[in-house]
Length: 309
Ligand code: GLV
Image (cartoon, rainbow, N blue to C red; front, side, top):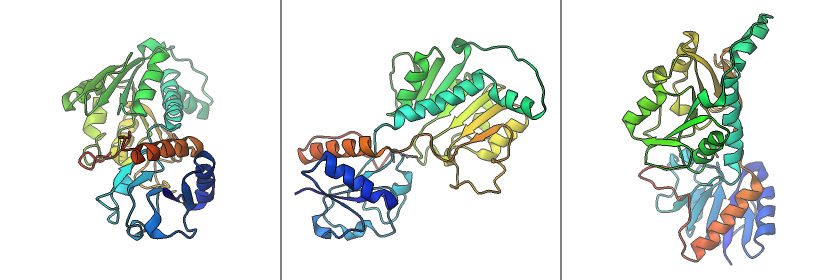
């Protein structure tokens, strides 16, 4: 019988119950319940303890209970010969679209300016902006970025998208390559970052690139904190080059209480909740992928070590 070991911290029993419900023919166990290590065919996990993986010598693939696999990949104990499979959407993309849209609306309806005015009890109107004149750029056009870009474009905004490899999406002006990124930034009123965290994307949004955004632009980061130079962001907000930022992810999480980001008037902070892993659709996806792998069928979301996502 195909056996799946789940490590999902305190939620382990809930995940296991979902596996048992959706796939009663699979043998599923929530760590630390007893299991013969030799029998484990698949592991589904997010942040298991150090040296966890070495105990299961016959594992065929490891499923990440999330979309970003940077933490798992950077672990020295991650078995290099075993495929890592990330969640592809599984209910996260719609949530991320909502989150990005909140940022777009904040910019369009000038919410940071009105929030600042409220602090001063200042009643002052600014000119309206139409959707079509708001240029939104999405960095990363995979399973999540594609849904965000097309969802925002469908509402009438002028949407562009950038990805390392060329993509084509209806209604979205897609570009790729380093030079095109600079040009895209220069034409972005709202920048939404959903790139995976890799050696190439680390600090991609540095001072030089953020300065390329037009005056008054707004930044949404809901991917990983290491891609954005937060100090550069603060500098550009203080100089009023940028008008605001919506941040869900940080270099250190939880964001330390003494971080100046918490109290910056131009920054709105959420605690890494833009796209939460949903148990039911995630288990359904993992089960479908296990069935395909067992039948020798290729599945989406297999991490390619050379590109790290
Ligand atoms: C959340 O950040 C995820 O990678 O799924």
